Image 1 (cartoon, rainbow over the protein chains, first blue to last red):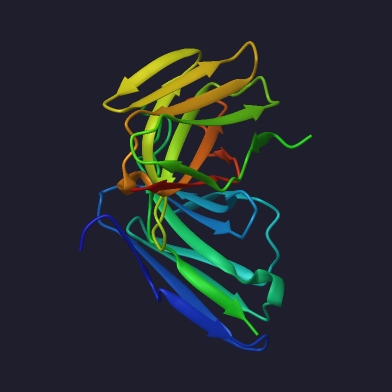
Image 2 (image 1 turned 90 degrees about the vertical axis):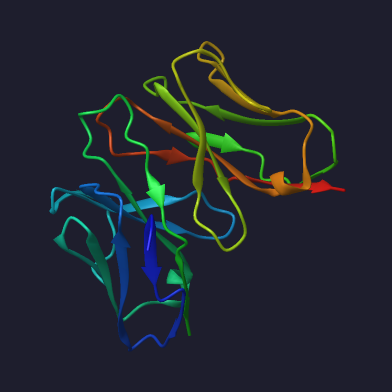
Length: 116
Length: 112
């Protein structure tokens, strides 16, 4: 595996289900991100982890719960979602900010989530 | 006013045409300006980035930043069907910033 991988690629869940999205990066990076991409809206940053510590939480509802057990893995735990949460969820990684002039973010292919 | 405005298109051009994609922004703190390309069913990939004002060229692609007008552009010369994708502009306040502010993306189709 190379780059950033995400599983599953597609997920359909009911509003009462609990599911998790998984992201793995094979780039040796130590910062990881969750983004939400909805139709006709810009990408929205949800969470950022740097060196396994959460450093950004952009007013995301508590029904989304991130977990970063190590610098290569990132999870997004989902529970009691709403239909408006249907979107493409993208994971990204970068080298830890502050060391480079610009921290290029490398994206995974995303998980297409549908909430019924 | 939204922080970053980008015409979503769709934009359809014949093969070989010159394509111009643009974004405007309102936050004068933005210092880094990026263009991402996103193919269908894929994540965005960085195409080019520019620091502050000026031009940057990479093959058929040229990025321009005019900070005085808060306007950025991406030009694609000799467009190819393989350039068909959604192009996202993104901006950052500075080195060490986690936050990228994206435009909505412009969907481009290059017709053979």
